[in-house]
Image 1 (cartoon, rainbow, N blue to C red):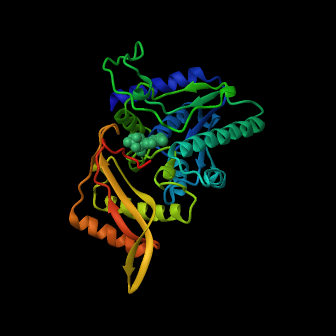
Image 2 (image 1 turned 120 degrees about the vertical axis):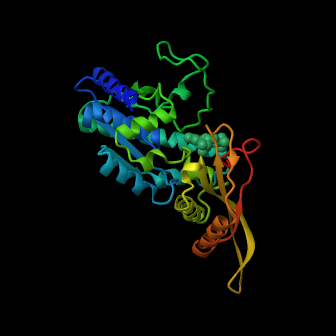
Image 3 (image 1 turned 180 degrees about the vertical axis):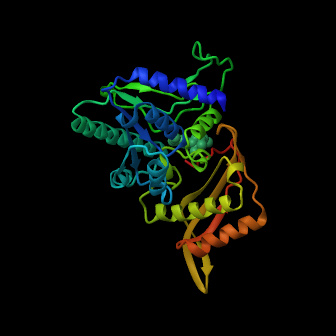
Length: 329
Ligand code: XMP
């Protein structure tokens, strides 16, 4: 793609011009497409003066930390520090039931950890990092009028931006936002040129607060997170095996804090209920529930009930957005 090749070369030139040879840059990776492509691009421009951090908040999916770290290291050769902050996040979330409270706590904790990371780096390098990379996209920045000279003429609906973010005021970091004139499909093309694996570029969106908004109520109760991870993995892997992953905008499981009566073997059980949710969408603003065929659903429900201890009932969410939202919280 010639146009994106030009964009790439231009961006690298701009970044090299912005960051002096003795300056350092930090970047928080979420495991998503945008931050990964942004970091890979900046890394190409300034090499190991880029310092990335990936935070395991204890709310990631099955083996997610291992999987994304492997991609960062072996496929992209990105310098990434992985911080396991699960205990920190989960202890703050204990007993918290309100979805917005959960989001706030997670956002705040993330900032503290990022701040610590910057401090550690300062000690190690003998100087403060001066820039921060953000994977902001064009639809995130425009209001009704595009930035002058951007060549963009059409307005685009602003997605309510609920990424975990907002940064400490006293960090005084200058921003590098190499994707801020691009749309999602262009970011994917750019990622492709930068050799970000296709499987990574096509990942479904995943909310910043992670599984905290998919375990309804207190996420620390019982083994809710563990059950949810297993169910989610079976569901998403079955979707991949059936060749449906790219047709779906998001697919995931939700854990309900209720128990239902069931019978397994000749035992009466009183176990958990999980929900499967899959939707198609253009931009997440509206969404339609995805219609699976009968056999697919029978197989998935069988796999879940036979393999995940503590689940005896599986429901499917067949509500579109509106009136529902994509996530349950
Ligand atoms: P809703 O549930 O609002 O979701 O219909 C629309 C899209 O946004 C994602 N989402 C979030 N992303 N932080 C995020 O970074 C959040 O708190 C959050 N809540 C929802 C959701 O996964 C869907 O793609």
